[in-house]
Amino acid sequence: DTGVSQNPRHKITKRGQNVTFRCDPISEHNRLYWYRQTLGQGPEFLTYFQNEAQLEKSRLLSDRFSAERPKGSFSTLEIQRTEQGDSAMYLCASSSGTALNEKLFFGSGTQLSVL
Amino acid sequence: EDKVVQSPLSLVVHEGDTVTLNCSYEVTNFRSLLWYKQEKKAPTFLFMLTSSGIEKKSGRLSSILDKKELSSILNITATQTGDSAIYLCAVAVSSNSGYALNFGKGTSLLVTP
Image (cartoon, rainbow over all chains, first blue to last red; front, top):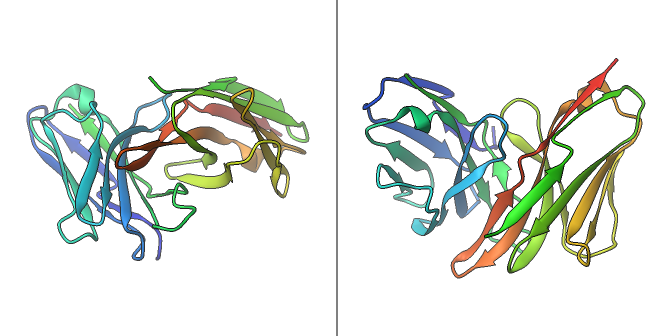
């Protein structure tokens, strides 16, 4: 499969626990994005990497959230001390560094439920 | 603050009808406008528009951008039940580090048999 892969597909956790999600982008894509989507809303930008460098973070990304892309390939998004308000679909997307690089390819997301 | 507004938020039509979905935006450093279809989980790319007045077409779907009016429309002709989905409009804006996509809330389309 050459698409964007996200794991796990679903995560149920208790409030206060830490969770980590993984994203494997399309192999030749150097840009990787994390978005969050709640019911009835469009995806909201969280953060963006070009290769291993985290170039931009939304103000939505509180100190409890951290993202890494250590070798410029896969990325992880960790949420510490989860809160019920963190319940959402976390989408990862990637794009190439070519002229049409605004075209993002999305993964199927990780659905997080915080009880 | 950048804004992307879609209308209507939801729509129910009968198979065979034609629908028009709207997207308007107020952003700084506009780069392009994109349409995505979201059926279950992953939004899938439909169109990217950068130039005003040039229609992009793919089968029964078409889209056009009006930079003067800061808006875009997505048309679907002869709708089918498989067109039922959320249609997302996103605007790419340039920033110091590159760009990001700002999404609207989406239009939820239901096509009934």
